[in-house]
Image 1 (cartoon, one colour):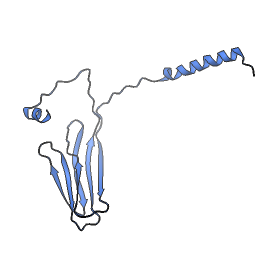
Image 2 (image 1 turned 180 degrees about the vertical axis):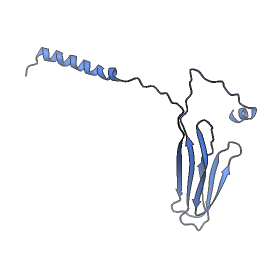
Image 3 (image 1 turned 135 degrees about the vertical axis):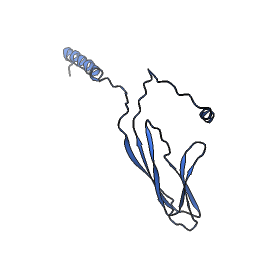
Image 4 (image 1 turned 120 degrees about the vertical axis):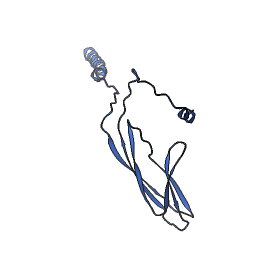
Length: 143
């Protein structure tokens, strides 16, 4: 087998050119989110306790955030074969569904359906808007 010098040089030049093509063909990609239309979702959480032995309970978080610019919570509904109560934390405002079943329940089940809406947010870090000062109560809570 003989190697032709010209063919070897041509192949080397072709390989070099092919290696640079992906860089030249790459488009400029920028991350530039902009507030758009609201998108609505329905989130379903289903909890089944397998092999329940005695009294059972479950704590299921539900959406409770309402931020005018980017997130809305439209409430939650649930079905269960036990007893359920919506509990709200007085300090942080978090909401949880507390479900309980009696000792005789063989198949504890709870299904929570939450409706929410969300949209993208855009913040121009090069030109930030005025900062909103925290109230003394917010400052105390967050520090």
